[in-house]
Image (cartoon, rainbow, N blue to C red; front, side, top):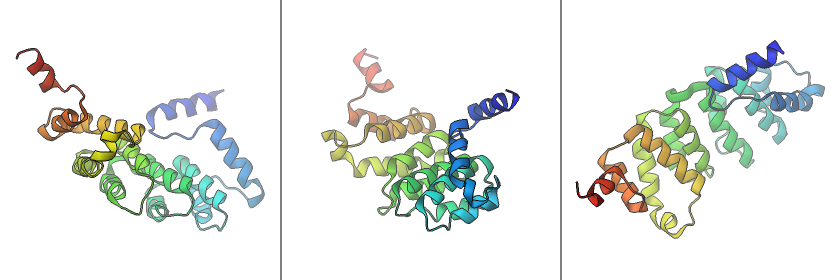
Length: 194
């Protein structure tokens, strides 16, 4: 019971926590491979030819990874398995937080990186102001998809929430909100005659 309470307490403080059930699944997957719940074991698994080894190792590093894991995780950004691409950036966010803001912005603008929603999710949870221009640039590139309703709403919401936190009342953010047709503080004041 004390172990569960300690994990629950830690989960509340981390953006992408490793749940008890996820840990159990990972332990089951690696049981026959000499599992040692330590960073070096999971870093070795990142080089496995088995895509599920790589996927579960990425997730496990959320719990035991340090800054040493960030470089190898970055190397998975273009992995053939979509889930590995997605979870690697979230695991980097778990380990490094705002220190890797520039990396999240690069991933968002990288045409070869297909998991844009996960870059926006990482930024929304832990990036600092250095990614704001990249988010606005990404949204400008996708204006027609946004307006036509073909843009992923979860990605849009992550980006808007990030920009609201970072840029709040800046002119470029309010202009973007006006483009979306969402009421901004300025348009509400104008409608009220202020």
